[in-house]
Amino acid sequence: MLPPIRLKLPLLILAALPLAAAEPTLTHLYPVSGQQGTTVAVTVSGKFEPWPPQVWVDGPGIEFKAGKTKGKFDVEIAKDAAPGPHLVRLFNEQGASAPRFFLVSSEPELLDAEPNDLFSAPQKIAHLPATIGGRLDKAGDVDSFAVNLKGGQPLTAQVEAYVLGSTFDGLLHIVDSNGTRLAFNHDGRTLDPRQEWKAPHDGTFIVQLMGFVYPATADVRMTGGDGCVYRLHLSTGAAPRTAFTLPAGQGNEITEQEPNDVLASAQAVEIPSRIAGSIQKAGDEDRFIFTAVKQRAYTLKLIAARAGSPLDGWLKIESKDGKELARNDDAGGSRDPQLDWTAPGDGVFTVAIGDLTHHGGDAFAYRLLIHEAEPSVSATVATHSITVSPGKSGEAKVTVKRTNGFKAKLQLAAKNLPEGVSAPLVDVPEKGGEVTFKVAAEAEAKPASQPLQLILRETESSTEYPVRFMMITTSENNGVPAGYTELVIDSTDQLWLAVPASPAKPETPK
Image 1 (cartoon, rainbow, N blue to C red):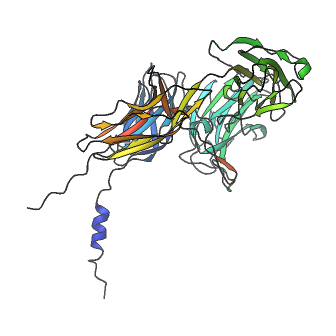
Image 2: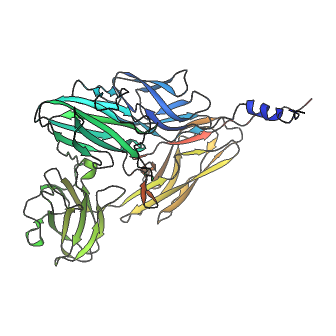
Image 3: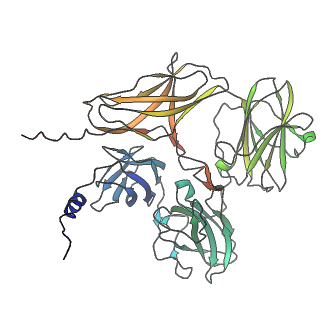
């Protein structure tokens, strides 16, 4: 005798009911870029029920138009859209996704065309320079691109993937038409590889890109998937020198003068100064002497890796007899060092610079900024969005950091709240630290889903300082690095506030 089926019917009925809408998630876009004045077909990865969500972009001239197929958009890029990286969110009444990146280029962009796994059947790149937007689609995927070069002609291959938040650690190979490997690079100034190379003879050469999963796992096979998006830049001609742009008003512009390896030959500089130099050979160290005042605070900042230099710099301060007083080789998630230092007494001190890996060369350029530390304040929030239901309240923790004697009285405030939503001003403690931002929605508050800005405001001068959500992160899992210490956009002050609609009240039976 068959079992009765009446017990299964309620399960079937429940399964047929529509799921409640939830805030969308956005993990990746492919392709992740497009040229001004064009329309690009973009696929998004994540969760978005129901389809389509709305799309917020951080600037004008970039419009996402949803297609009928779930996950598909046509992105219309105006001719005057600002070039460079932009932030994108998907949103609905329930809230918004974390921000992701879409880049606008002023030059034409190609798409990687599968199948191109084999060096013997690569995608042909007819003209250089070229930028190719691609994705390693599946585990073990290899993307191959063929270029024609003259003997002695240089080729520069640069990958953007890690800085886009991609989920692979790239490797670049250059092989000849027989598959013989001629050049290889794993990491440039970030985990993204960069290869500068000269063709040994006239011919066709193949640039191949592949990668391991990031964050790393015990599986050492080549990876692939929705998150393995990249941009590959190919160009001929000499690789550009590292370019540094510094704001005006930071002191005298000084060029490093060799020899200055040891204390006896250290180059004298004044405060403030901006010093342009390079670690010219393996094992080279550069030294500069300056005069400091007792108990006065100074900032010494090296700019190298963030400007494209291969220098993995360290920075230290020495007393007049060569004793090390302070040292740093990484600061703020960057490979570039910075020292915020208070002079222990009046006198002459030395700042020394070197490369952590003991490499050097003309390309190992840097800028050293030395100036008296100025009072400053910064604020960060751990969440990118806040949801508050009608008749309810919500909160977020804001961390305020006062440095170098910043004493101004501050209040935490919200800007441009929707109707029916309020947030009281919060006094910031004199020492900074954690402050709780609270927001409340009236019972009759209308639904809203929109950008939100939090600010610190000086109570006397009304000067404002934005509260930022940091998208870069540093973490380790059993010693394995995770997170992204450098992205095309590191942080944003464009947070999100959602006030969902009140759930419909059930009708009273008559």
